[in-house]
Image 1 (tube, rainbow, N blue to C red):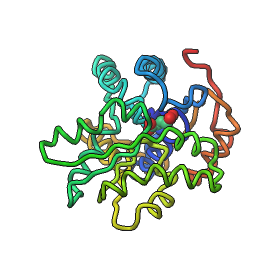
Image 2: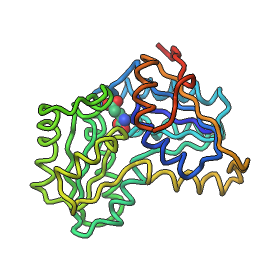
Image 3: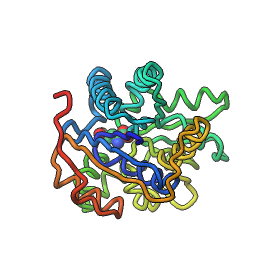
Image 4: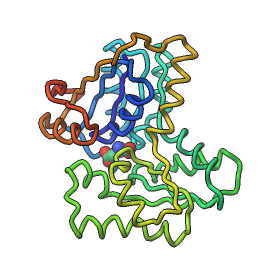
Length: 267
Ligand code: DGL
């Protein structure tokens, strides 16, 4: 079984890519919606949530953990990877894989990063891009309202459009040719972002970037499920069960009814 976690429905964009690449695996997804949003939490708060969820999932006997949340990765990625090394469970995180893809596909070297305030403050993307040793110009934009808009079932009214437009302005001014969607919620509004930025800007998402890395990790360890049939998927949420079920069904285009359970986790 593979464990996946996020603050809410954003990690479903990662789970979707995993279901495409590795359909025979069994998945357990923790949506920490009772503690949403992560994007405005401190490093200490994010670390406490990340550690509690990791300990919980390690007890479920998972063979691999995916941190499907940029904010949690930026704050607690190294610590959770260390917990994984001690437990003998590989931990794969977002940030690194998207930075690698963005660096590989940019032509102008002007890369944008749209992320939560916590992720932007951590400079995780800026550092991952600097580590490539190439002269990129990186424009990072914090979008405090975007994940909450999406998690709230996005109303798509004029005010939402104006908010998203204001996040895109600095990216347009910087003339980026590549935009990292540095929050796993954002692929759910990719059409709106693409429209505001224009066709020439290429969007890089976490799910797509990380699915290949997970496949390679499992293959190298001889741990790929080979059952010849579709695996199972179950969801544990710390917040409202019905709301998650409804949104998740819509985003994943998969029936979630009967598969979502409410849990209390490290309250
Ligand atoms: N989906 C999460 C991320 O990738 C966090 C969104 C939030 O909880 O603010 O950063």
